[in-house]
Amino acid sequence: MSYWTFIYRLAWTMLAVLLLTGSAFIFVPRYQELQELQRRETALLDQIRQKEEILRSLRIKQERFENDPEFVERIAHDIGMARPNEVIYRYSNE
Image (cartoon, rainbow, N blue to C red; front, side):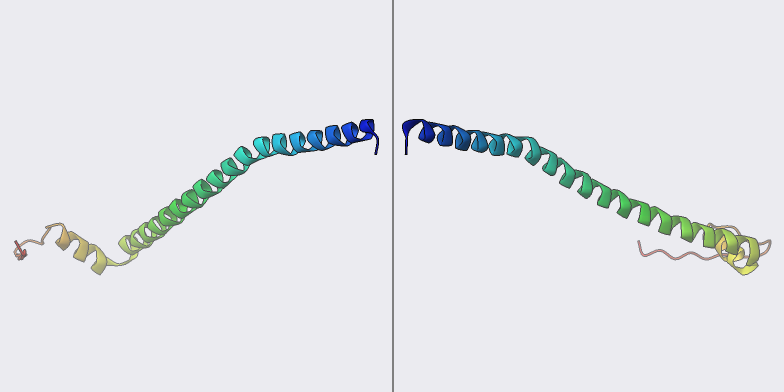
């Protein structure tokens, strides 16, 4: 093998190594950023599901307020309201 053939092969090999190393430096931070964004998306989707569950519960309570007088009376008693001549006793563990 001639001297110049060896130099050409060595140069092409070094160029390939440089390109692979450079592309690694470019793509590794982007891949880490992608993973962080995916973790953040998962956390936000979990928050959305929790908020939707709370909203669903509130809508059910709203519907019950509109259609269930016993529910309204029970909630009124829970917050301390009473009918005339009615006494509400509260017990605490304190």
